Image 1 (cartoon, rainbow, N blue to C red):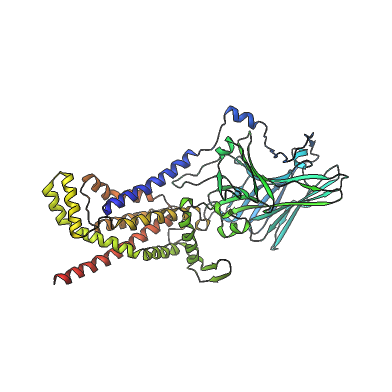
Image 2: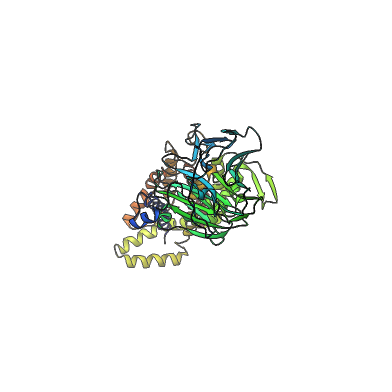
Length: 559
């Protein structure tokens, strides 16, 4: 296989893979209707869905709520949140350190209670669970309507519910400085004359009729979970509508994912929890967990708790909260390449290096993700130089054989079989391997795709500036300068390589490849285009050095 055919084949594979990824995204359309069978099973669930108890308990007549609900505002240095006193649900979270649109000063909203509903709920089910007993869910009281961290390390928000039978419940939210993790604790004082049994649940509810992102980049929006058997498993909206998940596991977690951001419930790792999903008749998907039931004797106090994370997909933070939670940063099937590339990029940019958590070293990073991309490109091309040299040496030999190839073409004309046999015989005599340039090209494809997923999933690159007009490496070049430069560099490389393809149609396809790729890459993250452009520039320099060196050696032998 000649090197040009290899390049064409690999380029088509890359394009096909990316187009297939886009097709998959377009096929995963929001669920707007369900079948009759599904509707019948869904009718049981309403907007106030509360999971059933894991215990065999009798049905209870629900007690109506006595007061009206209100919204409680909470502000820390990282988030602005709203809690509904009815049920104590977190119905809004805005991330103060992330903008919706670059330079807009409008915080990015993750959870919201509007038309695109996406909220975090928690409560108590079980034999005596108040969310199971109280109609419309219990309405808590709080001392304040507004809470502010005000430079403190920790902020406690207590919601209180006093049942008529003497059960006293405090739902406590603990917010911490510089953190997107919220501790949710239920402190249950059993002031009744009987033992009570309650079971905590936490769930994420999201409308499935959501706005999909436009553009070339396919991103996943939907649910995911982790168990002892499945480290990371996606469970999209269509899966939830078709079948309810019911999975017991030690520890585990449930999450809702979107581009760059995640919300997740993490129950107690020592408990055997029940993970579940549901689909409401309002076209809302629910994924949640149920903790084991706890029995609280009369006059005693019980505690059950979980962690809610609402924030960016920060790999270092997520892996500390729960095992495998960092896998929500989904690098695809090439994760084994993407993760080291991201780690190296992060070290170059920040200078922070940790050796298996035993000690940390500050190496002094470049402080610019664009420069980090250029440096890692130089590193990759340097590591591949021995293979690259073999590739270009093979190309140079093929170029020297061009006159002989032309003679064979004139001799055999359109007789392709004889032409092929004569060509292979010439390669054998001249000791030229036409496949010598394939391996570096084959290695570059997985590296390119792995970097593609790094740019797609790493929140650190979101709105990351480079220089001049490139102010967001995760977005396309607004003036298409980098795609144009990349196309020019591909054209220069093409002219430096020998054209050994004899088929006129394939020759024309190769000639138009720089144009096709410039147009195709114009809509990709500018950071990815920057990598490809710098890689081409380095290849041109290496090609020039190797070809000139071989020319000098040839001249020395002839003299």
